[in-house]
Image 1 (cartoon, rainbow, N blue to C red):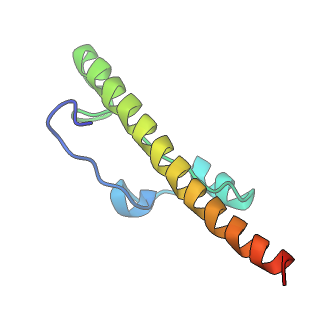
Image 2 (image 1 turned 120 degrees about the horizontal axis):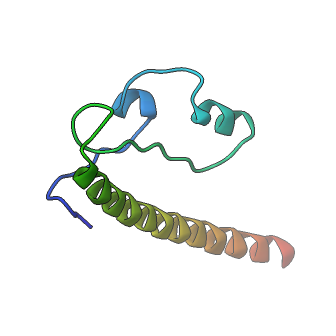
Length: 92
């Protein structure tokens, strides 16, 4: 859902936002967490006006719910594929 009439990019944090080290994503990779996201408030600079924070939150919330739905679909497809494979292997 597009709340403010803008679009968002996706990809690695380094490619989409800026290169940085010591991010939480470094930790998630080290403990094999499969899905991770990084977000920042919209607007200019690191101190957006108060009225922009609510809009950023609304976009963030809709983005999270869309991301979770996409992950659920991906994992459901993966499960169905693996389930068919396992069933074939058992009956051989």
